[in-house]
Length: 155
Image 1 (cartoon, rainbow, N blue to C red):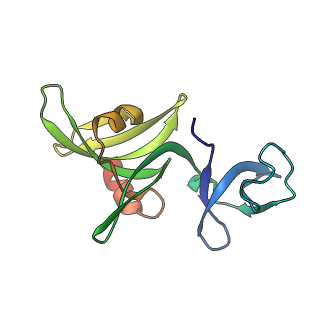
Image 2 (cartoon, rainbow, N blue to C red; image 1 turned 135 degrees about the horizontal axis):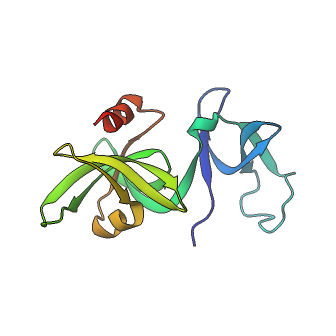
């Protein structure tokens, strides 16, 4: 079972923050557990810090870890909603096609809205892609790499 976790950009300085999501007094907030692992079953908020976040940047953890390239190094990192990913899966006749797309949540599932190398648009289930390609890689996100997101969605 995946842990429920969110991230969002803080209103103060635009830094990414990870934790629990809530709406308080009309604001979107991420709550960070200051005593990691303690009071797991308690619902008190005494040991939490609250950060106001930009609502459009809030994304849920997908439960998957995929590759992130940093220079020549690659490491596994958590995949969140609104991340842009690249992957390769076969088409209907078995030809391997490269895709770049944006992960989003809809109807109780994570999906990828993307285009392939031939310019064909498509919607793919994230779990299906993860099963077919063990080299899925994060290439950015819709909030830090706006030009990539716009290029994906203009196709």
